[in-house]
Image (cartoon, rainbow, N blue to C red):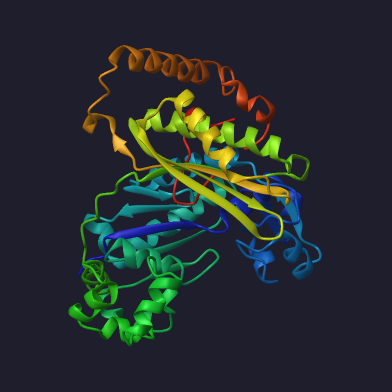
Length: 407
């Protein structure tokens, strides 16, 4: 079985970009946060900070207690996207990047002579050296090499930071036994609980389980896919569907009031609607979430006639917002999600063609002006008080489109 995948995982990516751009941070514990507030959470931590127990999701106030010398840096998402593109180009100069899986992960297909162990290792070292010399030594990566992407990703996590691990067919499955179930992509807290309920408590249990046993544990064909992947076989990717589009934002202390929270939601919804139109989808559902101090939360959802019209979505959002009552606690985070998506090509439009046509023309004009002259060149007035709020955010599994979502 040949080596088919070389997987590149950039270590503590957001924090590493900051250490690259700010030499004073190199060798220091760094946490990247969405806003400068002790009540928010770290979205990235350098390896120096991780040694103190600071990790993604750690509350900032707790992180400061764990690591008194921690450097708190407010995130700069547009720069992380810019460096992501540079790093993709850098890897591409060494070998073809088959797929970009997230802001800090990419997969390269090994072919021909590169499928041999020594050749693949030489290629991995070339990638590391090129990044260090041409971009900077602060941006380190771990590389995994294996017969399929799943195992190559697993290998990239087995030695960090700056690791290089090869898994060959002869190493399987013994080389996996030292891992925990949740070290594997696709196994989270709920899935681990399901596996344990089926008597699969260790990685060895999972690797030696039958195909039928894994199917039963997963309750679907996903168990059979796992059976194949653990043995190094290539399994075709599942077709992905867009199920929702959304944005969320942690409010800075000065915006923790109902008026500013609603203005931020207004801006988030306008950004989501613009993304929806660029994807050529319509939404049949709208949901709002508000997190309040004291761990209180409000959320509600409505089903709507499929639309991508900003004005209609804003009208519906106002209706939903007014249903929440008047909680006394201060809002500290808000979120909006457009769901029940249907591709425009699969949708039968309304009989009111003229009205729909006018709305489409307005939305296209707004999108075009914003793309040409920059975000907030044209916007609907409800977002006016939040133009400097809700900046670009990055989810690790999606690279934002700066032309649509940039600030």
